[in-house]
Image 1: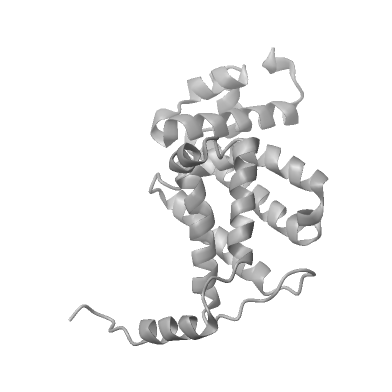
Image 2: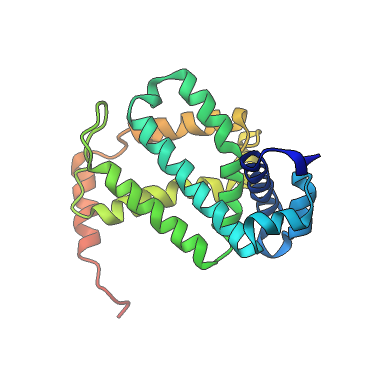
Length: 212
């Protein structure tokens, strides 16, 4: 059935099947045979397009970061205020979020590279002059970007706990909607007074570099 499909369609179907298999079984548990079965093609065809499982995993990583990059740019270019864009982005991102939830706890060099790429992209976007967005006031933009990505990806990695306490799968559209709305509230609220924030900042800067 899948063997007669157009090349591009087959390639994409194999990659998408691999995303799901890596998300469910991890890099070690996922197999060429299992990916081929999920994509409804032969293992030989998977190897024809991608060669090895390593190459297939790399293609999935590249796709994940590209989807993330495109979504970030489109969101800041007006998509965030467009219900149509938000609906499409939410549906398209479910598979990517499931994949990232597994990849980011694998401890592989690829996971590290993917996170580093995301931090670099976020740092780049924070320096743009986009309507509706303010530039950060931090004097350590790299750390600021890293913390933002850590918080965002942390919600993905902790999706089982988040889903349990929210009563809905946060990797599904319904659960993600509630999670994203709460995240927007967190970004909008200013919980600390300026005075308290300055006191905390001064205390942190006075901390010694070691425990002695």
